[in-house]
Image (cartoon, chains in turn purple, orange, brown, blue):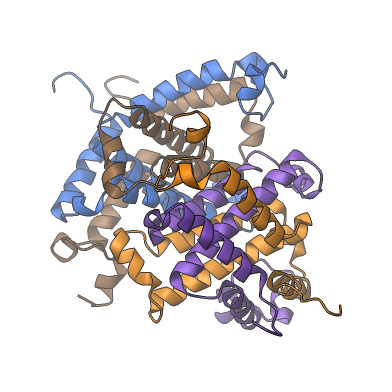
Length: 128
Length: 128
Length: 128
Length: 128
């Protein structure tokens, strides 16, 4: 591959696949199992703020603490499962995300959505 | 930035931040709200296989169908929330994932973990 | 209360409220926190079968083992959060469930739904 | 059954089992599927407060509105899956919940836990 940068996610996926195959774990990686694990890892990230107020939770955003590191690791786990799913389904996750931003830009026009937490269907139904 | 490729995730994060700020949505993006949304998007991905057997679910992995596209979009949504969290907490998500693979490599030595679905603590406790 | 039995859930709710108030915990029980906790407890129950096949998971249904007891306790935790939510919102959970069965009976007519895992909207759209 | 009241949950379970069996749905009710559905229904309940502040979410607790009814129905769905799991695993859900309150009473002594949102392990480690 000359003259072209390889993406972060491509490199991570290669390492993940090598890791998985060295352990003969593909047999456990049905789509259903990967999606269950994705959901469970997201729950573990959420658990970090379970009984906290918004203000207390936002304190985790500051680098340095034990909980900041825990948040970083839980987010990493979620990404690893996303990459395994994307690899199994044969799509490019970064491209999928770029296209989803495109979709969101048309669903949520800046001038209508400014400062509002509504779902996009609220605009389409002419409620504004 | 000469002579150095910018990562996929860095580019996506820039677009996301611009999208968010053009709508004045940072006010809604407390860590708690982002983590709740991460969890809900993961649940929407899981919902795609809710009543399916492993075999039926794996059929979604084949490109072309409506459910394959739905899976792709739900995974994209999960990634977008991960990036918003990483941006708010000031860590590099790709680097966090690379380090998590390092950790997993030491937790799950290939020769011990081959073909086993146990949690790594099973090896540490000398159960093998 | 003469001549009338008090329901299981009513009795459990009374104990829960007394437990909560003796610890001055109502301050933490915002609806959002209770719903986050409900979701996290459901995830802990799901985690018990994370990497298992359907057959392996069904083995947990047999009384006696450690995992059967874990399943029982996780389900209990989910129920306790449901009861706290119902108490806070002032509805009768058992009655809500009875009405939901009524709704499901009309959404899923037995003769149409027999042996099918589709969502009820599939019938309404005349897809059968 | 003479002279003894039957519990709410027992009656609901009987109706649920009849509903399930009239549709020949037991074949879909593996433990794994029931636990996935439990988690997804809990997520649907959480989604009702997704972008709300604690104050906005607590407004759902007031009877009368559309969202109050939605909350009631989502909680009912969660209970119905709990009952299907308890039936499949052969345990009494109300009794499991009563025992879990007993456990919590010993884990969280009122005098130590008053006004604190810590996990019980914080007391056991002598951190108070």
